[in-house]
Length: 100
Image 1: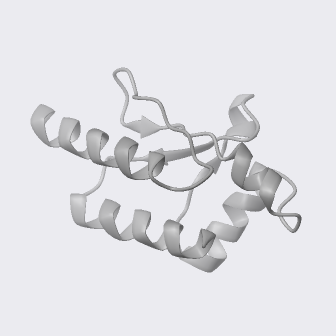
Image 2: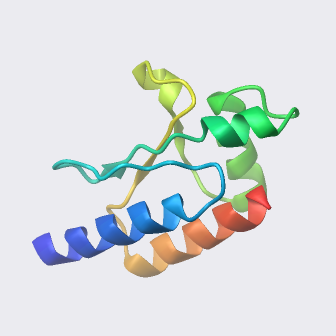
């Protein structure tokens, strides 16, 4: 399981960093990524904050992310990688498509 979670972590961090306006640092001992989407929020006048972005991604991409403002870090979104690689690949692809 350690190898599986490492592979999922590495995939998620790399894939998120490939999305324009998203910055994701490596997680340290958790099964969550906590990328900044602030540049995405700033570039889209129809999205005022991380809560609105989380709602947008839920409705448009079918991906549930938790707004960072719930953890005192507005502009970020939390994504769990405690799921299959297939689910992660699909989720990241849907996020990319919704943000294009």
